[in-house]
Amino acid sequence: MSFDVPDDRRYLESHEWALETDGVVRVGISDFAQDELGDVVFVELPDEGDDLAREAEFGVVESIKAVSDLYAPVGGDVVAVNDDLFDAPELVNEDPFGDGWMLEIEPADPDDLEALLTADEYEEQIA
Image (tube, one colour):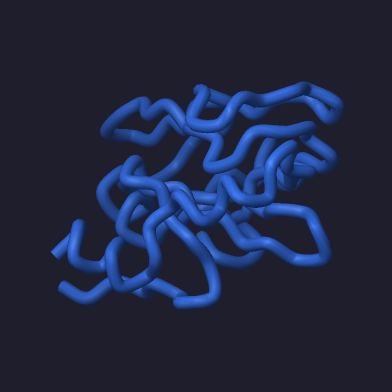
């Protein structure tokens, strides 16, 4: 099975993605992760203004098959949360790299992104 792995973002081994735009890092879970989870029924996310440490747990995604912790690809302040997921958690399945994004972080250290997997490295991991 082939999964979408956009090469414009970086990845954590735990299947979160990070996309930096204008100094803000948008975070979600990969196509592979949403497929493994199955139908997402609930997403728990931090509040705007929360301070996250790099690779610290920031929330939970619950599906009909499993509950999985979510990990921050970069440390910093949460500047936005995708409130649409509270009413429509299925967006994580339908569009994991678009409307299914989870939060945006203003990174404390922009170099955190460099420590993440490239798309090629992530594809090797999930192969």
